[in-house]
Length: 164
Image (cartoon, rainbow, N blue to C red; front, side, top):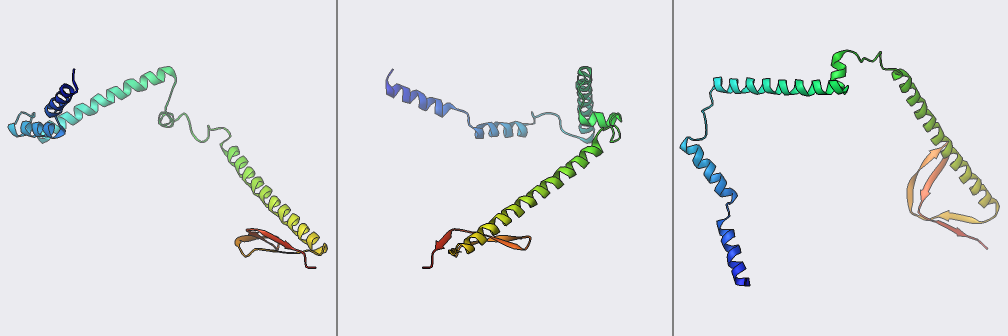
């Protein structure tokens, strides 16, 4: 088979291919011709809707029965049955208290860590002062926090100079 034959075959396939516009055109013609189906009236719509709702209810009931045979319940089914309430939930109150205690301990540990870092920075500052070495920070200041009366400032770089 030659390349020209393949190209011709591909062109013919592309030309005969049905597009979305062709599908839409056919559906529109079908609607215009009146072959689409029964006209919708209030009675026919209500009959269709009630039939569909009943079929769905039957299907949902069958699925629920299968799940209950396996002993698998949804949260909604458990709440609607009334078997599970806040009173039957063991440890509900205790879990809340434990969580609050953990949050309190975490906050306390964070505060202790900040205080330790501040004390360490103050000790290093005093040591540097006592050694006679002057030091300073660059002009790039990224803000800071105050902990226990000690201002902790984050800076970009540390410059040390010895005034001799």
